Amino acid sequence: MTVLPDHLAPGLRVVFCGTAPGLISAARGHYYAGPGNRFWPFLHEAGFVPERLEPTADARVTEHGIGLTDLVKTMAQSHDKGLPYDVPRLEAAITQHRPRWLAFTSKEAGKAAARHLGERPPGLGEQDWTFGGAQVFVLPSPSGRNQGRASYDGRPTRLEWWRELAVLARQREE
Image (cartoon, rainbow, N blue to C red; front, side, top):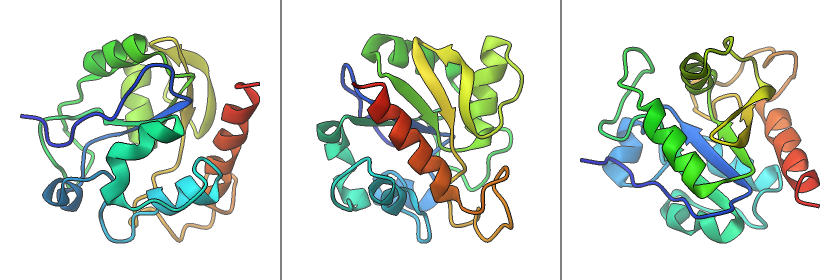
């Protein structure tokens, strides 16, 4: 049983990978569909897509050179603790589809991948290791529960990290 299908294609610019679908996203059948989740606004405001997309358009992201997946494909969650992360499945998918960037949409997801590779737990931003051949970037979670902090690893807003990845993804295209 897959809660949400992967939206992947060969040669994408960026694949965004979360930990597991939230309960509301699973119920609605679309990625990042919970109230207060900023994924879709950040995607547009950072410059990944020319118009703001809604969660119901998640299957169309590959048209914009973007992919979506999660580390847990078999269940929805309301927390990130004790989940059955399938990092080998993610690594196989990334190796197969060869995106330029793999962006984890939380430190927890980035930590799971780093552990799998024997790397140190990552902070936010560009990492000095690759995963399945893709450059790695760790983003602050777009979840509504991850807002209002004074700082996100030294940056005043989460959006600044998303914009940095968008710039890097464009630079590496040229």
